[in-house]
Length: 458
Image (tube, rainbow, N blue to C red; front, side, top):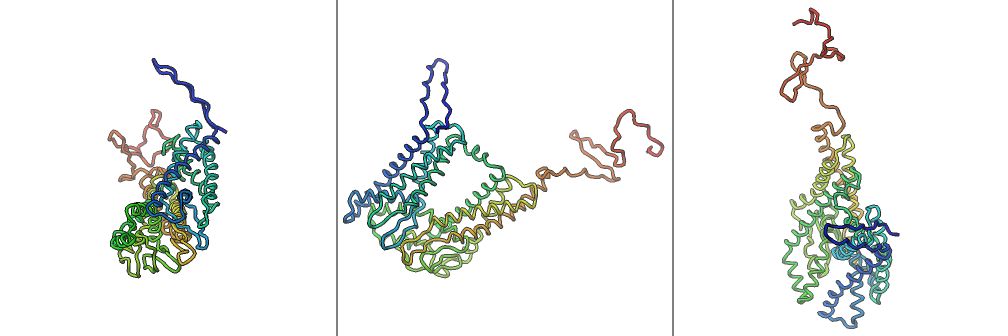
């Protein structure tokens, strides 16, 4: 099925007519071609990194076929596909930063599918996204089967599902963006839904910015421990570059953990451990320099820092409530807090997803529980952000309606009464007209009005 309109010829003055555009390829063909191109490009991007690591630290029994399997496994890791280590457990704490690589490639692939298939309507972008996502999911499943070894096996189900969802979302957004600017895409939503989305994005922006500042500040405070771990590893030049890239890939995970830290429950790094604003209880940590940023001990976080950190979700909710009302004021005063709380519910759902994907097991031993709890982070974010957004949205909406009653469909305020009970109204030319409140509503200043009686004379 193709959803296209032939491109017409356009002639300019003094120029030859442009050649006719050829018939568009079917979306099934363009989607399969784009999916194969993304897969090959991704493997060619990651293979040199694995090859450099193999050359810098050769492993006995790992030849070029093993390098290709490792590169394939790393490409699946970029899709957040977990691995089962035979006899060791499961590896699920994967770097979220690597998702940018396939996401960017699929974004470009979605644009190309829309342009090559000559899709001209936004309502048909979904077909183009499905034409890209279906073969891409099949390729991810094939790579999961091909990369299995005696040591590790990627999850086939996760590979197919993650590949499909990532291609559908990234490719669909890229294809839609190829047809319309962001403003037009936003106007496809209903005004009330658009305001909730805007408020949710504002609240999430505050949470993520605060989490990034907290993670960066904690790493700066523990810079000496970071340098000590880096020196103890002695990775060499190539190893130092690869280690730096690995830590950069885990930066989104660290930001997600910091966001959950600000919510109150914090996160864990091992069974029976906790890192929270009220205190931390940790066991031995892996020799990964980035982990030096985690506070250790009951008094590792200063009291004023804990207070500021715990206020961040309420500030995020207040900011989201302001954006919600500014985007679309609510005519009924009592309804605005409900929409503000809906903003908190959406923020809690996104926070739960971030918490779930930022952590995961690191084997079957003590590190089987690593990262924040998704359901705790989602519920607490909903309550803290939602309550703050509801209160601020209701207050700001009431102030806006008070200043401008027309937003609520209310009549304009009655004219002011002057002394003597006579109402006055100012005209644009500066004259003031006095109205007789006892006059008949049907009387008009016409010539057939009877002359005033003695009682009406001054």
